[in-house]
Length: 269
Image (cartoon, rainbow, N blue to C red; front, side, top):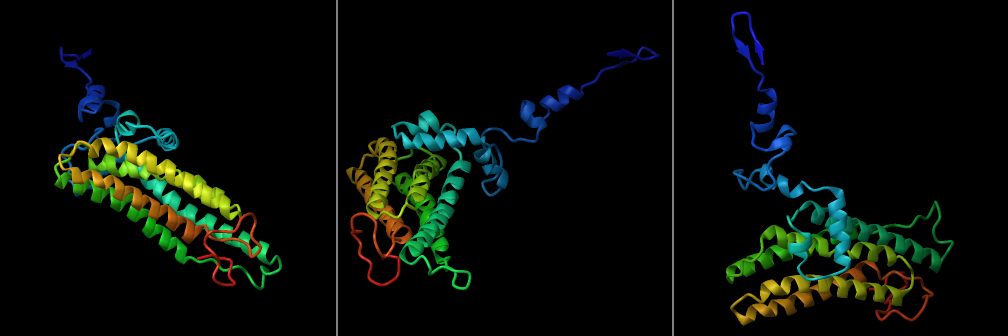
């Protein structure tokens, strides 16, 4: 506070204005919006911004905790729920399936005929697998939780939000990323074991965290949804194995693959 020549007093409100003008403290100075959507419209990008405001350390922690499946994952580890982690988990899985499947194909082709690959005769990759992975992963990781949430809302079960449902399904697919890397090993029986373990681990994670919600439904038929989810998850695991990890050398390593190779190619399906 300063006093001017004629007794006038001057006081600075800059710090107060910067801190309180938007009601958000330090975050307001940085241009952040509140922790949860306020009055922004559902159709505006600003409405979804808080769900992507999360640090990388928290995302990694939420990912690896899915490898130790326990109940109450939403309340203990997913509060508040985010969409940033599930988006990158599913997107990383898509590229992992394509890249490691292509690598497995190259290894299988080399083991089958070491002289086949050359600068004049390069190995051709099936880029159609990328679009297949895109549709399969996003349809399951985003479409299924949204449909599940809508179905439960229709039946009067509203214990969780759509963001929590999508986040649970997205993080639940993290286990397939390291499995896709390990499935590069050209041993068919090992690939089946890895896919089976991933199916059991991720399936148990989803069911143990979904069942408490389903159990609150009045209609007993709603509990059959759990069986449908298990069957759907099993179909996803089988699609991963057949579409992306059925490459092996002509001379197989280890026990014979349960799905035989119908032709001379190195891809067995």
